[in-house]
Length: 289
Image 1 (cartoon, rainbow, N blue to C red):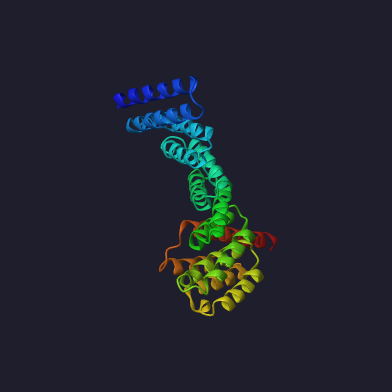
Image 2: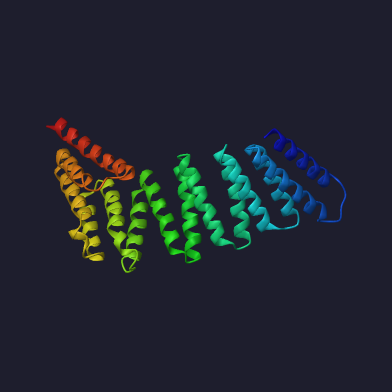
């Protein structure tokens, strides 16, 4: 390890010396880039992630000196992969630089991939606003390249975060658009009931029973098989219990569904908000009587 660190430092010094000296235009940056690449590899072997990341950024700057934007973007990605092991913030900064360069040279598919990765890094840090922005950008880029499946996956992440941030109309709009797009697709139509369930849960979070009932009618028109599903029954039962202000009935409907299909943490969090709203209304009514 120490031996690799020493080698890395030696290569880095030689690269810095190349940059500080005279040379034919471009050639000194080319030579320095080769040395920085060797230095970064040595630091990686030594598991010195911070040094490796910083050297990859120097490598990126060398590539930019002779306008090799793709190579510079690759170096920023390498830097991000090193920084991910020690600093999500530094990894995000490096990946952002890579995305910027990839967009400039029209590598939209790659830019989309790294926007998605930026979304995942920010999700990991629970920075949901930023995560949502990056997934939204990734979805737009994938859509422009007609990579529909990846675009829809990113859109679902946007909807997920929007709902967590209580931006329910945005989440509903995205889920309903995905359902409309998927219903006539042989491969995607089987996932529509799950998408409509998510949309319906977001409708419930708005605490408007009429809106939920209207939504269920629309979903039945979109997918005539939906009314025969457990997902539809759950939403209808939850809407009824909300209308009646019956927390026990609400909980019973959830338990019945959960006994056959486990509710994931996202659904559980949102449905708990709905349950608490029913409880609060119930207590308010008790106080008035």
